[in-house]
Length: 195
Image (cartoon, rainbow, N blue to C red; front, side, top):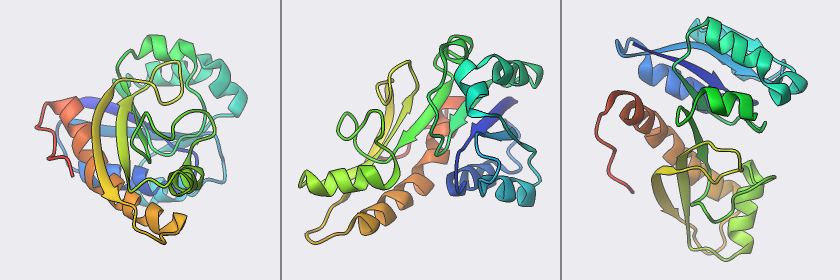
């Protein structure tokens, strides 16, 4: 049984989607959800799902030792980032090499790096005149959005699209593929066909 912690900063729709996907799975246990925001909706979602959730301060996440202690006490095997905005500190990276997975709402290496998250990414895609965008699921390293890529899937950017329309298509890819790719990484199931 792989014991998973999900880190999320906001609404938590991806965290809920992942938790529902693995509900009842005998190989993967979502042990708890962590956030840096006590008012994040992810806590409400976790409560509805019966998953413990907790908040650490931004200072705790920046230092990493308090968070790492909790991860170690809970015997967490793997960390999944689902809309988590803070940089992962070196102390956690070193404790979880190639065991922290993230999803980015664009086709890296395009539109990655510090400050490139959420609608900022979709606005950058439109401003660049890209005709395709998508998702990138990748391991975390010490540089924003530069870890080894596990999976990408794409969707079109149509003439006249707003950032919200692009975001809607990208979210659909996130919900469809992120849990499957997590299952691939944790359990060795086949990667889904790339869109």
